Image (tube, rainbow, N blue to C red; front, side):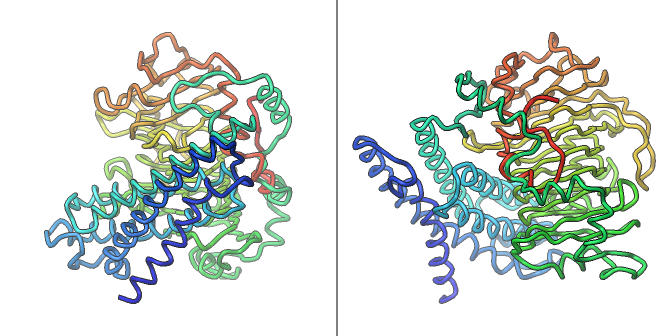
Length: 554
């Protein structure tokens, strides 16, 4: 009982700054006398929301806590229900997902509540917290957990409270930016957007001259731009299967890495095939994995939903620690198309950069789960929904290779699952190549180019957002370009944009006539989805050393 009370008090302290930040006085959101009245009214609503959030998240975590300490492979009595579906290994795995995701959300909410948190950071973290709740629900659905189970009401209520926090914060931040003529979330369309001011266009031209997003420091830029040799020589840890390094497995190196470190820890993974599932937890921050090249350093595993794993935990390599970086490696899931969802790389880390890597799988290959990501000069192989998730992610100068699916299946490059219009999330494909696959450079069996058509994407959730711009689209993409998820679902709420693409599949005359599909003709609108604007890249990418284009220019 004392533990539960302490947990709730901690939750209260975590959530309080999140709700009070938009109300924290003139230094955060300067307001006139009239605006102060509105702030006071909002304050009352937020206090009510705060209390409800703390109570429901606390109860949800308490309901999950018994399962969180047990192995997912165990069959046990659960706090959800006594039915057989909720006492299966898959149900245990789903509970593990929820416990991990809710704990991650507490960190995100604490960060958003810091007085020094920038508005784009806070909205990113609140968006990710909401995504975590949705992923928990997805895992429970995969496991067949009944909606009326004991923890479900608290999970649903906690999600609603996080959503309210995001909505109120976004509204307050947008109002402040409008008053101060600052550029931010308000400049990114929920669906079909408007124009941009002359001042904003001028700012965009200045940003295009930069080669990196702001969030990559000069040191981090060097980490990705310099040849691998200097990084290898100065690595903090070396992974080698033959015992010539500090560790024989990548997982052992991750365990030995410092927690919540503010400095980069470089892990050199020597040439070889590493048959393991790697997990970089949220406490393992600023880890940099450097391989010896695509197809030379290979991390390989074969988990799938057919093996009683949730999609979230099928990943061969999963990274949640902020500042995650990877370069010159291959990550593959060899489960095959007949085993359905099988993730190769899942990234939930904020300010993550993946450079010159191959990511190989079939269905659900690259899970850009949450927060802000940048992928550059990568090769991604897959069939159904092979780039999916709810991160704010930009793929730049990547090759998106369509492989042969199961008979009767249709390939889809993306399945973006933005569920709330306040989330600052979406998938941007910039200066990439969407092409049929040759045999991939992996140990998986080589396959021929796909016989099925390949669509640019389909809407997994109601406010799905994908933009394909300045990219080559091969002839395997049919004239309609996009595929419905289920009849008319999300067709008027999604945002699917295309801008200045080329190639035999890039023609827009025969594209779907959905209200949410947009042929972008204005560069000002397209600029909203650049590295600098969409993922605040100019503030963090320079530090990684990854080569990138901040604006539209190639």
